[in-house]
Length: 215
Image (cartoon, rainbow, N blue to C red; front, side, top):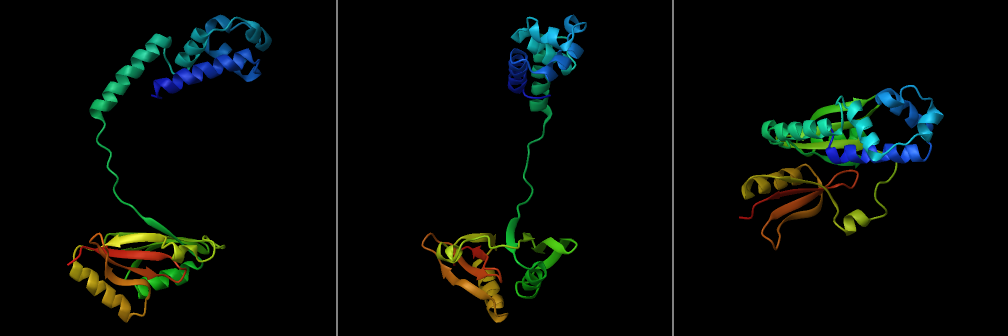
């Protein structure tokens, strides 16, 4: 059931179309409203057509006998929806990184950062996802620079933020990445607000933050 306010707007739009002599609306009026059934398009557009007629048109298109019946039906369905609809819960989130070479990017994340390829798509591939535990990153190949100049590094514009549970895990992850020769935009440090993090640079210049609690 569409929102009642939207149906009111739809009725007003039909009324405007009739006043403006918009021919396609004549066919809709003739098919839905019995009193206009024997009139041709020009006769319908010259006939008296009020907001109540436009509302009846909308109601009949929705399967109701009239506007009041539609309003009652909309209210009933809205109340039922509020009573029966389960709470909506967002299940996951995924950052999207823009890359120049999807294969090279997948190799970086699997060989250097310990991710696994979830899937790649396209012929040739242009989109994919990599995953490590509960962290999911989407990779989208683009053929042109996404950022102007060095603004990304100057402004520290992050492409993704990933977290671990403990300070020890974060330190171990940093040392693992250091051993694989990963480039860092920022090495491991404690921020003034208490978080502890480091930032990795991928081959395309994406800044990927890894964070955890302070000691």
